[in-house]
Length: 482
Ligand code: AMP
Ligand code: ZN
Image (cartoon, rainbow, N blue to C red; front, top):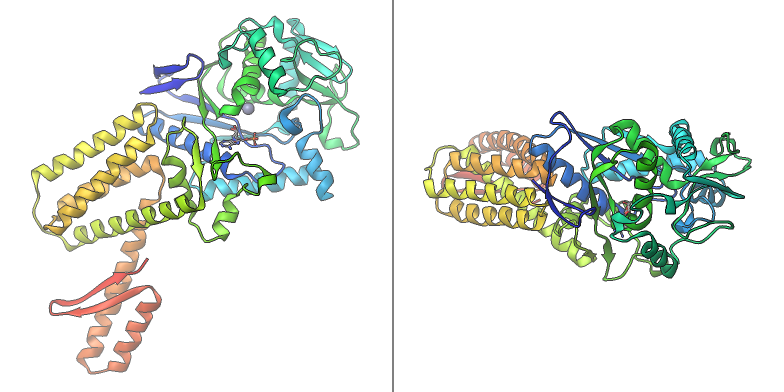
């Protein structure tokens, strides 16, 4: 399997640290508001990567954090904590705010059929682990104290900035130019960051005592502390959005490797951004959608998932309502295709064409080689669509049940990665067909006894279920309209 590693800026053959388990850490949401579709696109891409690893036979241990303290407005070094600010606005406690948006986030993950991480860990539950890490860094001489907190002197960490492909000087210039980091008083380098911030806030749940003074953690320290707690000092894969490369992940490396003296992560993987109507998402542009809003507009979240994976995870994706409508049609085409194959399977018999069976195998191979080459979903989907096209053609000219079985099995295998819920569709059509067949039988009985009122009633019941009947010379056939 080939994986693009940001650290070396090229694809590398994936070699796990242990053949027992692959450790994967994902930077989770800051729970001060609903996650937007850009955030959720990253989580869907990360889910597809994880599912591919699982399909290739790796046992994955997946850890995700929930940032409920420490993330300041604008990611800057000064400013207010995002969760605390929202709590003030909503006249609620910070705990109530983070609980509410954590719940909303998990709901969105479920809607998008994202497999739940094995460990979901909250920053506020891991303050002792973070303080232990701060202590190690302090003992090793990486930290200095200013009025607002304990800061990491990034000039002391060898290779600081390597993840961003820059040296120390260059990254400092870059951050200064972009004004990405504001400088608090007494800070030595633009890239320096707080690992502990002093605060005498009244809100007891959001401040902790420490040997350096009362306060709360800096944002980056939580990911270093929690990832190493659950996956060990050195683990396989760390993922997040590309915005995390120059600051958040660069600082995680400085903290973890500074404290342990060991390599932290082998493969760093970054998800490209989602734009809306060709523009950056911004509240001021009114183009910040949430999954819940799209569902309320009547869209199937699985169509949103399909849209997210239609592009490569390293390529920027442009979201428009038009493109989502297009994906809704594609998804319903795929579901009808599953129904059709299931119909052929249920009708039994038919022939088996060697060339067709070989084509199915070739499509299967095409799909998985694309996924194992740095998770290329566009190419994998192209293999699947060509399988659908050829199978539909084959169904016109007398496909056999054994062929349909093979196509369905391969589609389900694809779906173990795509997560488009083909399995649910199959069991739904199976259930529906049992019900419909039973009602058709009852209707035939009624017609035999010239009970046309009853026959019409049954036709109406079926119509309510979206099923239309057609009486042909060979008997009654039915069609489901959705
Ligand atoms: P945050 O809650 O701000 O920490 O972001 C959660 C995740 O979403 C991080 O991995 C970010 O890098 C990612 N992210 C933020 N904005 C976008 C976007 N427009 N497109 C894709 N991913 C994003
Ligand atoms: Zn993180």
